Image (cartoon, rainbow, N blue to C red; front, side, top):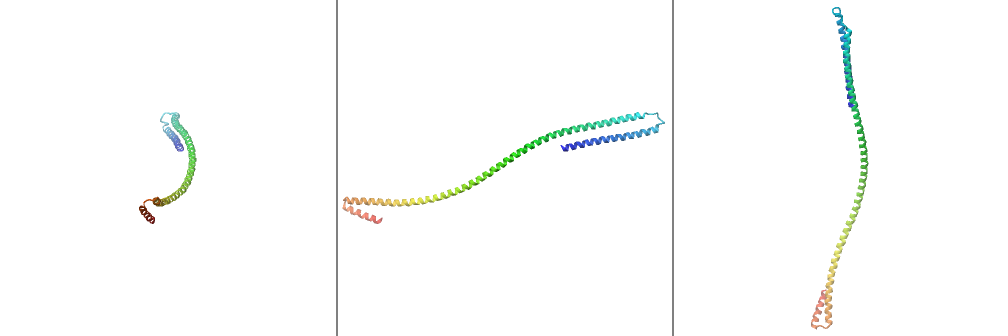
Length: 214
């Protein structure tokens, strides 16, 4: 808007300078014509009939004044037109400026709202990061405890398996001894009940050998 105003002011100044130039030329031409007519009158005053110089000067003055008025009116019309265009453009620019101010106000308000929301989101992010760090620390501690418990349980399981294998071996030995003892008891019982002496002596020998083997 400022540039447009300056440009139009320069145009108006040019029109005024042109008008002043035309007026100056008009005055110079009138002066030269007066000098020319004055010289002609002095030379031909005795040879020609009398001429109404005042009427001629009035006619010429009217013509030049008419031309000057026409130029002045044209310059005025141009000035008024340029002034009207400037005023219209200024009014349009003022309206656009008001709209831009409103948009800037709205954008500033939206920016402030977004900035507040950003700060809120950053605070929430910081709180979540702190919670995550605490959770990871707690998880790491519990995971270490669980891993230690697993290692301890595996060691106990291995010990239990070894104990079970040892107990199973002992159980098999005891079961074998039990079976032999039951066999011996059965043999002694038959001997006590009066079985054949030949067979009894043989069985007694086998029992004694068995006992020695144990």
